[in-house]
Length: 330
Image (tube, rainbow, N blue to C red):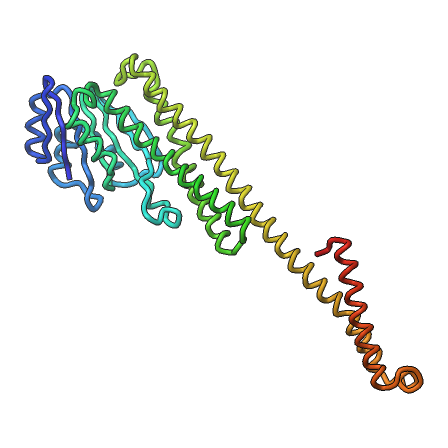
């Protein structure tokens, strides 16, 4: 699916018909943005014609659009720059299947055009497209401004995901303190996988955005370099934040293991106390279970002997409980 928007002498035009798009390009508009959504990860014949014959993009660049790169890059070609960047568009069950939330955005950048190609429907591009149509004088006043808006949305998607991770970590901390169940371990590991996946795509992004901060860049004018330095710094800060969250999850895992150890210690302490309390009963009952005829007949008698044994058990148990309480063993 293809759609395009043009700015010619302050007049905005938009279309989603491939043939009309070619006609508009022949008029040499001041600025063009063409967005291609690869349905079923394939280019249609019209889309292929636009990329390969009209813009004359290199076949390697077009091939990179059809097959995921899993690694960001920025390459210079004759008349344009091709880039592959990655962002995050969270799915409903992103903590379980976070890899599905990562998208790749391929972008061709020339002197007066931007062509974006993606295999997933990206809602932020749709919203940005509508904003451009509504306020072309603001959103489409220059190629640098449009490019900055696209990059800013991609980088900002990491910050939104980090907020979700922060909420998850806070909830996990509360759950660990309340009741460290085995399910919490699974949630901690899922969170750790999410952060690892973010680091895998976020760290290499710095070099990609750094390309547009160079003073000798032919696409970005000097007055706009500061905007792209801001994007690069956002990326650097984002990577530091991801690294910090990674350490937080490791600490969370240690807290969980410590909580399990403390809980196990409490259980062992309780069982030890029970075993220790019952021990005198077993000893006394075992001793008086012997045939000690002299004590039974000459001192207590049969009934008195039973009362004496039970009383001795109770006194011993009470004495031990008082001792344990003073020692603060329970």
